[in-house]
Length: 127
Image 1 (cartoon, rainbow, N blue to C red):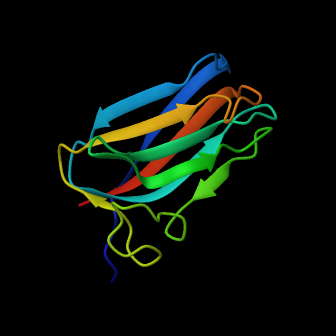
Image 2 (image 1 turned 60 degrees about the vertical axis):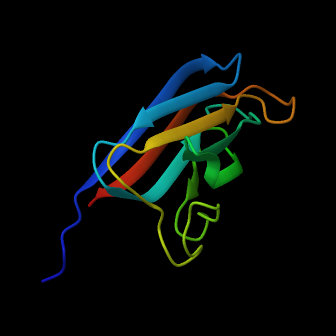
């Protein structure tokens, strides 16, 4: 019988049109591995985001586009290619208990259209 992974999500949602960049930080509650990221806005916006830790804020994902018109963009093993990934395309990023995670959102990309109703969901496995 295979190993059962205990998964958990960390979700962020901001209603309405974003009017400024976001700098979101949280501390991981346990050792864990990032498996998947989903990012979406409700309009045809231009928001981008970086994902990393306090030591390298774009060390997992750098300048990725948020999905438009309620169709999420998804990111997983093949997309995790920053400096915090040991072997990009082969290893999921792993973090220890107490790591400060960082999600930075550029609300309108390169001075484009502000994204509305932003939702970003990160899926981790514990251990």
